Image (cartoon, rainbow, N blue to C red; front, side, top):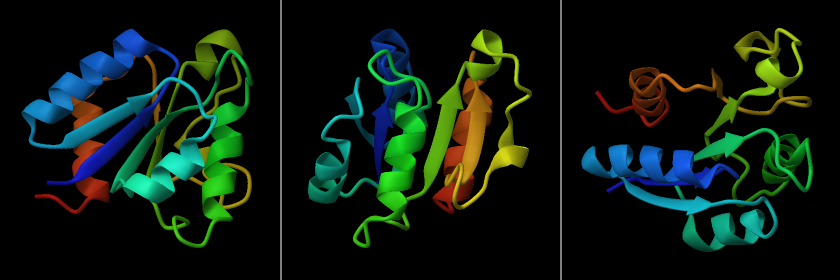
Length: 130
């Protein structure tokens, strides 16, 4: 069974997405902050990370965590999907076209409100599930 970690400060969203993914036979854990996430990831080795961009304690917390993961040899290959409402709060036309190994080191990007079918499709693609 493949493991997914959701790191998002929106606990209701994380729980809803977690329930849907568990129904699809994934093991899902959630965190509502980025603090200690690298340690958790190293210890629990999820197969995929779903990561919010903005956190109350750090508006760029998702960027910071993604960059830290990419600098950590043991977990630098972990697939990451960014989830964010950043375009609603700061109209920047921020999208998957901005994925970059230095600035936005993730594999994919989904805007909130999340289309559940779309995120499940992206998860399956990254985990190579048909």
